[in-house]
Image (tube, rainbow, N blue to C red):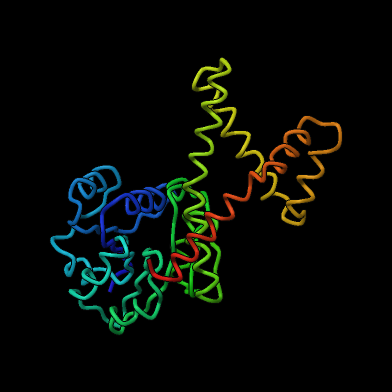
Amino acid sequence: MSRSIGILGAGHLASYVVAGLRNAGDKRPILVSPRGITTAERLRRDHDCIIAPDNQSLVDQCDLLLIAVKPAQLEDLLSNLSFTAHHLLISCAAGVPLSTLKSLAGSAEVVRTLPLAPAEFAAGVVPLYPDHDSANALLSQLGELIVFDSEDKFELAATAACMNGWIYDFLDQLTDWFTGQGLDADQARALVTHSVSGATALASARPELPLREICDSIATEGTFTKAGLDMLRQQNAMQPWIDACAAIQNALKSGS
């Protein structure tokens, strides 16, 4: 069987994964599900994908399969397909444990991942559990691959994925504040997004430095940075983020 890539489910996740692979120079044939035909047609046109006539045909032609449907759709999808020991299923369904996936995948190998929207630009986190050479090679093209050695640890990546989405709302509110102070929309957006990306770039470039140490080296006594940080701490501004993370993690554990 070829090393063609098959994607079951043609939605937002499929779109940024395909774009990320093509941007990374991956020229392998990519077959996409006819489900979500509008997206599938765009992927065919923009990224040279092939639309399979049906899902089983896609499975029969590819041994590397990305499962890109919502968790509630997973059982219905997989239970109607036949897999062999040659298949590797890479599931992107948040909260669906490996044991459930294996029960639906027959003799196929199964791993879990959760690529995020920045994968289109090879940015952000790409979690993987368990480690697998073929999955590693594919997913490492999409961002910072983090391989987990237990499923409990991997589940924390789903919470981080939600946090990634919340950050856009945070950036939007800051941008609105700056536009309210007189900046035009483009200036405000650039000021906010590049300030944040600069902070994460420094943290990534200096992994030997604890994040607290970086913070304290910038927010020193007498600086406006320290004054603002003190106000945020006095109002316990970070706690709602921690509470939201805990709520999502509890929901994932309970399966709701």
